[in-house]
Length: 433
Ligand code: URA
Ligand code: CA
Image (cartoon, rainbow, N blue to C red; front, top):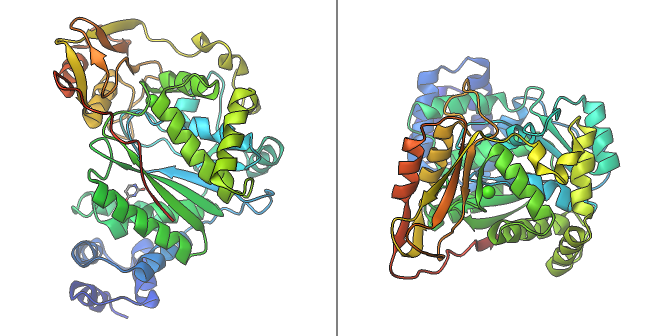
């Protein structure tokens, strides 16, 4: 095989064979195919697309480029959940204990990542003493005992994806559905899941801004999963405003604890119940979605999900007392109220800009090297559809810097108050199986 012929074939819109796709992924990973040919190939995929079989082959070739985690020592069906990312998305910290309390083993490998706030790992590290460096044996033992453990990325997972993602970033080929779908799915499959529940966000705070694109991405990922024998389903969920009220690391841990106590924001609670029901169902712990939802509501009401959170924190070195006393979490030095400048209704809260306001306070990283401040962030007091009076507080900025002019101005500009009432956006969209 010659790479130039593979590029030409895709450029002309033809279907590639498994052998051709594997030739590219192996050659690019080991350095025998240069960046310029890989760039041309990615651009050909960007314009010509890939069918489901090609996407499945691309995904598996990327999985085979590195280690694949073996979770077979853990009893039961290992269900992983993945969100395509949004603002204030605290679902993982809630869903872990929630489905674990229903008997579904959660063996989570998590990352830090870039963005408005830290990743799940950063959020958990807001808990004093919490660590994510477990040996494989400790990790497996903890999942078998407690049904829940979170570990940092270890081993050499999907090196092909790492190298390709960096190249896509500088060749304007990131926003291609086959490339995004295979990138995400390769990492999930390499992490050892038997089943995957995907939360595909849609709206201005999401990777996919339109519902149509979000649905197309979801279909691609579900088809890839089914093609490689991993039970996969997707839920489209709204990200046109932040999820819940809190945006920030420590602030989101507090929100997660409130939600596990049954006192969380309505939207965040509902999304966790919807995603959790699917996880309990595919995990084989319920026969119907209704039954699964009933179990989840029960482990919230009787405190057992919160109890598991405490045990999980303790097992990984953190202070479990935070579940009853959240003032033990990092606190920001300054709290500044942002006031409504008009009377009316909240009609729009542009999630991506609100996320940037949080990042500017230090809640997230713009580059890999940035340090983050776990205490800072934003707590909204209103959401779309709520009535407000002029002078009323619409958000509180938690900061460790006194000058918050920029974040405050962003909030004033991107939270819209108008006379006409609008309904809150629909939280749960299509379900794709
Ligand atoms: N997230 C990923 O992991 N890969 C992509 O290509 C896009 C988003
Ligand atoms: Ca939140």
